[in-house]
Amino acid sequence: MTPIVGIDLGTTNSLVALCDERGPRVLPDAQGRPLLPSVVRYQPGLPPIVGEDARAHAADFPGWTISSVKRLMGRGRADAEADLPFLPYRVAEGEHATARVALPDGRVLTPQEVSADILRALRDQAAAALGQPVSRAVITVPAYFDDAQRQATRDAARLAGLDAVRLVAEPTAAALAYGFGLDRASARNAGERTLAVFDLGGGTFDASILRLVPGNRDIFQVLATAGDTRLGGDDVDRLLVGLFLSRLGAREVSPAAMQALTLEAQRVKHALSDADAARARLDAHGISLDLEVARDELERLASPWVERALACCARALADARDHLRERPLDAVILVGGATRMPLVRRRVADFFGLPPYTALDPDQVVALGASVQAAILSGSVSGALLLDVIPLSLGIETAGGAFAKLILRNAAIPARATEMFSTSVDGQTSIKLHVLQGEREMAADCRSLGTFHLRGLPPMPAGVPQLEVEFLIDANGVLNVSAHERRSGRRASLQVVPNHGLTRDEIARIESESLVHARDDMTRHRVADLVVNARLDLKWIGERLAALAPRLDPDYAADLRARIDALRALTDAADRDWRAVDPDALHRAKHDLDHASIRLQEVSIAESLKAQLGQS
Ligand code: ADP
Ligand code: MG
Image (cartoon, rainbow, N blue to C red; front, side):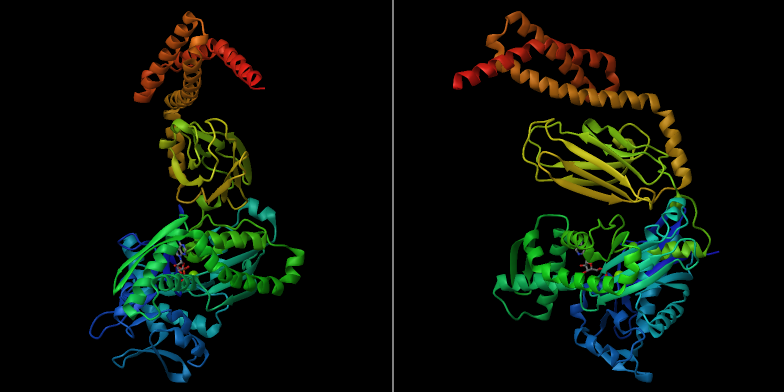
């Protein structure tokens, strides 16, 4: 039996995914790119060119490059009238007043044919990634697609040589990707639930309210949808282009320059989702742009744009209010590449009063969910996806490269744990948190789940910051890691799905490896922790000793120096090779130094009291 893949046939980007024992994953193209731009270029006498090439050179082939064809699927030319001014190609009227794509050489294509070219590219991409032919797919469609639009999607699949075994609503697919509706004991116990899906793509916005009824065949019901077919990430590109043009003092530029500015705007926008500032640079088409853009500035520009999306959400919530009175929202899922923007995440969290689900890539989540539906249909969903326990321990990397476990293997979900940490370097204004999964004692031997930064801390001496780290695993197995520095109030967080990407066999192998290495690993962890603490002592005692030496008995000072040297020799040796040091000897040397330094501390306190009295 050939596998059934899941396909997100998007307005801007399309993807293909497969769900197997490891859970769902996107099947990338030969260059490793997960997203296929939904853009097709037709030239006389040449086969259609689909994807990045067609997108990047759209301005060079006006009229021949077809984008956003999803807007025309199953629609009459008259219904699509409002979209026409925005489509950079000609739309003609075909049989039964349907919308058709008209090329400059007189060829007329149905939207189904153009979509079929995209689907064929995805099918080939999946077959190449899997090393076997692909002929069946679950394809997603917007929840509001009517029968004609759904039928057009099926026809496109057939033209591409794909059997569309099921069409699934995009918000439903997003919920499935996060494990909602899968038959997991903890989820069953949770009973009926209500979800909101916030899908902000390239040019369209959809808000949906879903009802999940566990234990039923058709477990998802779309209670309400609202949206805006002219709202998406492209608007932000245009806002940035407007900013560039005003800085350039230009009004009119050539289409080629406009295209280059738009691509640069998009690059800057993407960079600003991760960084506080980014540089826009362009030196082509008679334009010379070099401009630093701060995230704050982008957020000011984009703020009214986000509010428009939230106004749609308010409408969807109002439409579903009867249901929401009985069962308020349990979760908000973010979908669509534009929800990567921190501004969008913040505003959505504020609006719904819930931290949204972001663990999966928002531009992949629909395709991943389609593949989960495909796996359900082919009866192959099992194992990893449905674990009711955490298969491997979860924690963070601490100074010295050790792995601090917060949640232990086999903990039942949902689960929660917190622990306090601090810094090991003076004046750190940013702390990097590395979230890991595994059974070994050192971070390097575990599986990395992701990193995030807690920034903007006021400089403090090592050991003073009070960093509270919380691990929270909800009933769907989604892990929220948050860090909170208590003195400054700074917070940061990361969300991941720890169960994706591992098979039961791999989990078993990781477990057995941890047993093999257990003794060595324990020693290494202990040495790493001792070295970090010894360094803090060496630094503190060394500084005090240097400052107070004239007031100390020379024999005592010499004794302290000798102990410092002994401990430093051990920590340096441990840095070169942890095996070279006996942890007990290291512990003794540290303990001896600490003990011997008590008098130094007393002198230090006495001196500072004296200094204070002298001042007053
Ligand atoms: P669609 O569902 O319409 O096919 P996608 O979900 O792929 O669209 O979203 C595409 C949009 O997401 C584009 O406007 C793109 O610029 C935007 N996008 C992708 N990555 C980022 C990012 N890192 N930051 C901000 N916007 C992003
Ligand atoms: Mg989409």
